[in-house]
Length: 424
Image 1: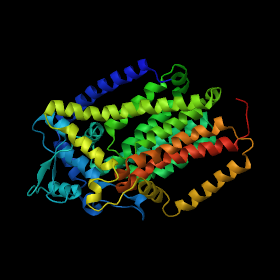
Image 2: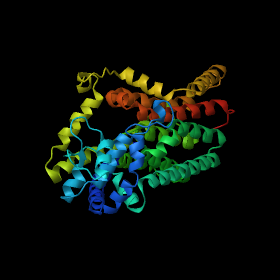
Image 3: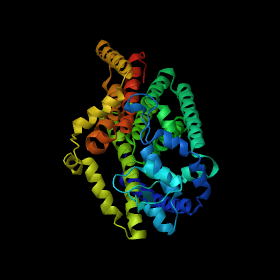
Image 4: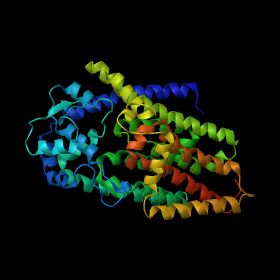
């Protein structure tokens, strides 16, 4: 259970992680970027052809985010004058008026810096630079995409095979369905979509291999906090709820025999404790950047970040002033619409009908303690969309991926119902 001693240990862990994160950012900004600039320049024709939001198929689910990828690359190629300021404020060049990072990137790579001005982006850690910059020191940007695709595929196969070995084919198929929802083509082709996937799939593999020790020794509370810390450091606020939703479902599936000896309320309390641990790691690490950035540079990072959180979370806010009519329900509907685009609707509709059939046909033999815990992680993406309605509505073309955690939880629930009753 989530007790005070464990909470204090997590807080200490977050504080140490903030210091380590700051050191890593200073280190990566200290690396020379000349070679990286040349390797990014080799990909100039790619970005000239694709533009800001290319799509490899019709529909928002297949859209790539070169807008954010260009920001990442602009940070790498930006000349460093003050190392501490650069690591904490993350400067880059932008075009005046309406910002189009891809256009600014293309302009700089062509050797034209006229009309560019400097801006900063301090409210995120930008920890992806710790991986991306060294990678681009070794290979061209277009080759980095291929390297990324290899990693995405290897992790998927490894997790799938391990899941099939430990939990069985039905649960492996549930994992495959969730990963398919993510759209691995887009994940492989956009640098900003990759961190959540890599961290979550690695965590799943670790859970599958080390579950017994994590569960028996009471280490899951720290494990979830550590994952939250990593997500906050490496992610660019894409679909973080996918991570905790998937891990909570795996935690329950892997340990359901022991957990079903407990009362339903106790199971939900344990799930809530793990969610809180993840949230403390995630929120603590993220806000830690605001604090350490303000201390080291004097810039009011904390106020800037709090303002942006308010903009993306409130229904009536700055977004409404520029024409966005956003509600919590509207954000949920929009993400569901992106998820259910095109032929995917047929599979989702069939899956819903099948789940309803199972619930109705086997209602007399259903155990609430077995089934209801799956609804906890399944509901998390909807809570996230409601709370972060502004961000979730505007960026639904990638935030919809959080619903993959819902798909996985419900697929595992369907598997639980389908399988013959076994003694626990």
